[in-house]
Image 1 (tube, one colour):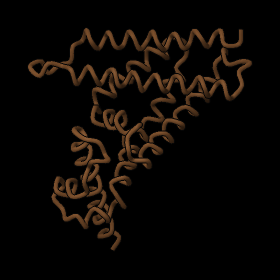
Image 2 (cartoon, rainbow, N blue to C red):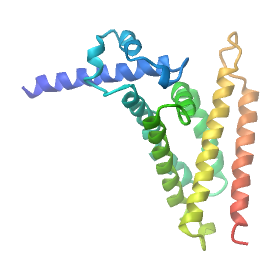
Image 3 (cartoon, helix red, strand yellow):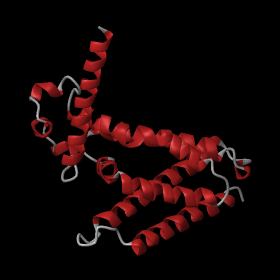
Image 4 (cartoon, helix red, strand yellow):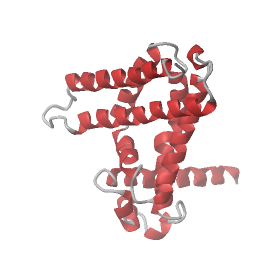
Length: 214
């Protein structure tokens, strides 16, 4: 009996993932607010009624995509911010570049829906980013430079870093989208330019931090 239940659960999870994958592909060309339920079920190859065994609505599907896109990044971000000294910024920029290259559809979805027309999805993204900021704040508080800082200012600084990471991800995404179709590899020079700008911008934030209590 338990074996049968295990098979059913695995099949249910497989179908749920198929919905997420299909929606992510469809959302490369449109926003979530314009995505139709039948469009998703047709892409998966199931009846529309099957959708409701996994999600309450397309908004619910969008929230699940937010969790898939951002939820697994928390340990990676914490580890990166815990890196001491100047290497922290270098590692962060490299992490963002690698993540965008590996998951462009997820990055595009978050960038588009962060200010999109589906309120539950906007809230889910906002909540995830708030979690990132709290985690970054926790690591920043361990730095010697944090002496004398209050929690509000540390959280403000953490949000600056998180916002800059999002901007950097968008810039790396643009390098992928603007690449020449006849040249599958993105321009190394363009990637380097984005990495250089992102590194300088984060260093500017760090420099401001050093003088905040002056």
